[in-house]
View 1 (cartoon, one colour):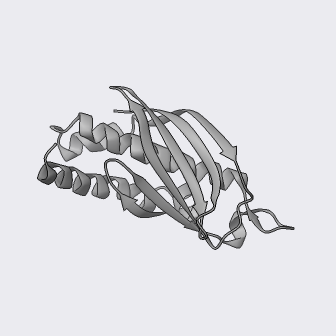
View 2 (cartoon, rainbow, N blue to C red):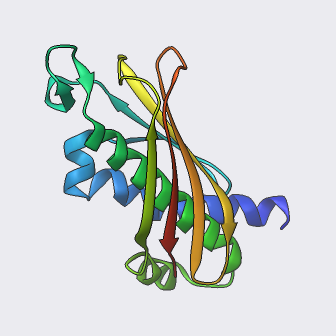
View 3 (cartoon, rainbow, N blue to C red):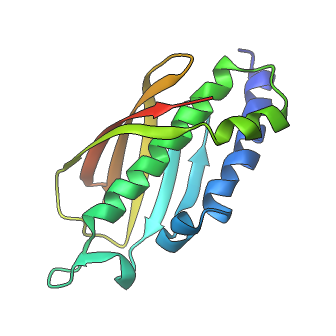
Length: 157
């Protein structure tokens, strides 16, 4: 893929996947913000808030929040990667394809307690085909400590 085609796809991707941040009530509740969005990597941010604490004694991030943010990051990179396989679709056709994306399997390893002021979830593609994408996700805190890792399998397009 040549650079200008890549840039055009990333612009469409940004426009369509901005809805993950703006329109999805659960993502809004979590405070998910897109840090960067590319065809080969997605980075999301959540700020620590009292509502996201799971262990109130230690003030650490709830494991369900960690799982949810990693799942969102995995789905977004699966969609982004699918864009590279379907370069000739219109924006409307791409929008229709978004509703076909779903989590098939998600495995999370919690490595450290979720302590931090904010957290960055990043995701990359491990393998993809016409209908299935396998992703790898990581969650780091503001000190760049690795909090959790995950692999996900997603249906696409």
